Length: 154
Image: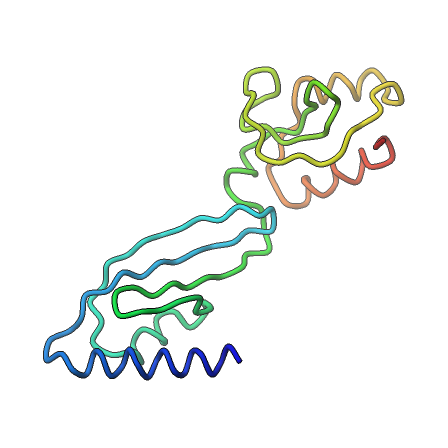
C-alpha cells in the first residue's frame, strides 16, 4: 500500500513540477529516529527540478509525506541519540533508574526512565555510582548498565 501511495504522490508532484517552466522551491524535512525514541529534524529549502533527482539524493530515506510545498523523509538509526549519549544514569527521588541531561543532582531534567530499583538490595558502592551518575557514552554502555540493574528492579 505504501509503495502505491509513493508512486501516486511522485506522479502528482512530477506533474506539478512539469507545469512550471522554472524549478520549484520546496521544503525538505529529514527526520532521524533513534533507538531511544529521540527524533531529530533537519529542515532544508531546496530547488527541485525533477523528482528523480530527489529520489536519488534521498534514496536511503523513507518517504513519510509529500505535497506541493514539502517532502518529509525519515530514517531509523540503530544507535542512541547524541542527547542520550551525553546523559548520565542515576536514580530519581523514588528510586527509578533514569538518564539525566546532566549528572544526577546537578540536573533535574530526565531524558528517559526505566524501572524502579530496590535500593536496599544495592551494595553501597553501587548506590554511590548511581548517586554520582554513570556516563552513558555509547549504545553498548547503555545496554550494559540497564542489564546490570535489572535484577534490582521492583
